Length: 189
Image (cartoon, rainbow, N blue to C red; front, side):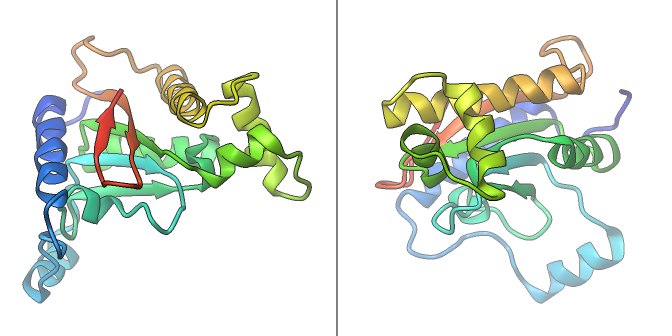
């Protein structure tokens, strides 16, 4: 994959870490959501510096968590931050066409989907999600460890499916992270 990235993966990761540090003490979102920026990104397109694959949980808001504004993050949300072909296609698009150099799979502690995979055997469409999580966590019953294993599984799925190898010169990198609901801290794994 030959892409002109918006910045390096290292620069993107630093932006995310700095944004999370600001978020920890913020009372409002610091990201630029101005009319001028909406008009600019409408006319000139988006150039997100990072792709965030995260859970659909309403308490997990990547733009706020990383103090980002319009056009800065390409966010893919699905319960349990599981990966299938739809998410892989979205990652491929953001990296290949928009120039995002970093993919972060961000799970969170106290995840309902992970909890359901640990303690329930749901039916219906939820089962597609919990079955994928069960494969990732095996017999793990500790919430924190299970959430980390689930993130690591999604990272591996992205790396192998897109033939991404960290440090092979293409500039695209994938990493995992865990958002802590109780204090807003992002732990990069």
